Image (cartoon, rainbow, N blue to C red):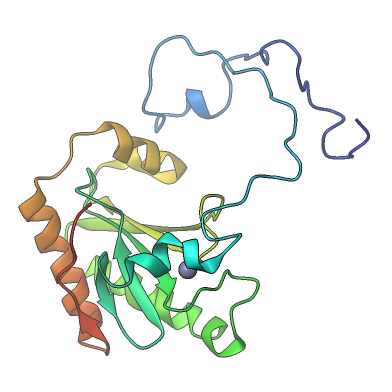
Length: 202
Ligand SMILES: [Zn+2]
């Protein structure tokens, strides 16, 4: 193994030692009890394709069309994450066209900043939300999707990068409330352009 990013790592070795420092020691870490770090698997190269990588016709975002969209205009849509969430809002901003960030046309790329600002403002407008987290990951799907997660006001234990983990483990809102909040976000966005949609859950 000669890759400069891998030579210092215990690939294929025993479980990684864990001294208890780091993220599991944070007040915001949602799990308690003894933890062990998994052993590190060898690299898989070439990596397996992401959804929509091999053939845009197989892209689930393109195939879904507006079925998950809570709001859309000519070039962008805001999708929900598939079903009720524990935290107030989890939505994804996607271009209508099948692009990742690196191949997004310049006109669309120039719209990302204003669109992110609009989405954050729309989420904050529902009230009871202290902060909106945003992420671009993209390991699962080739179609660009920017995550937006609204954190409930006052729940300081949910601050920071563990918010995703808390949303996974906490009880979910009932579907009626989840839909109502998404509709409020969509209406706030539509006030500045585009159309609110009645989306379907998975
Ligand atoms: Zn696509």
